[in-house]
Image 1 (tube, one colour):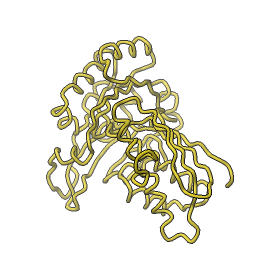
Image 2: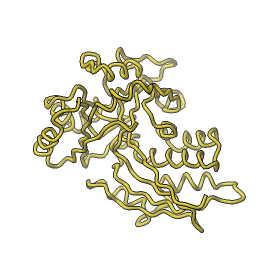
Image 3: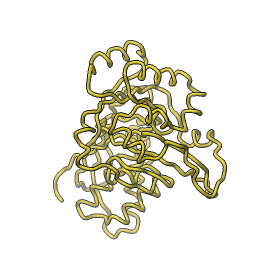
Image 4: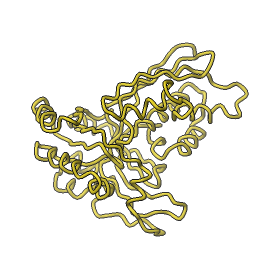
Length: 306
């Protein structure tokens, strides 16, 4: 392995996110449909004499400072990629040494899984070049973040447990329909720390999941393929009750996405990104409308990462 490799690290959105209960170990059970989208960071991995990180910060929000703090201009030892590499090299007779060059677009605190995607895609690369076996990579993924296991094989998936039970749900015959759907991400300076969002949910301790009607990932995926707005309207994100109470302006953004033709709109993850899904039509006009109405937000068009 002597050459550089540039890897795309897709963001993800959640179509439905139910948090039915908190487990005795303090973690929360979830049920969600994870969908990778083509809003991506880029990670270039190059063999080097030492392990180090270089970054280009392309985040166009005030939250770019959060990434700066864990870049080489801040404290790179706190960067998830560097922490992951330290864990990989722990106990290895011959440590892995790379230059990791990350072009960062996905903001933190938005519910899009940006850092988790960087980590998961790096692990997948190390599997592909024979430097890690898959079982070890999965354990590293699970121990470093709940969303990271999904990005070991980023495709539409039903995700349950605490994020570690992943069932790929798409089939080749679905590609044409998925490619026909476009989306808009509405990104803001609002940051929602995941730990705080879970704490505010105040879910009870229960021994078994009690999912809400309509929340099942399989049902959500079928409704997405069929564009069934009636079924999709029943599929919500439990975190909206918390985040919209703290940041009511985000509820207005969701309403605006629906008003300008989205067949589904929701917050992603524990927030704060809001997205709308549309059939392909009038994308330029829609983006112009949203950018004019919400000048403090960044409106980013996307498709699914297929």
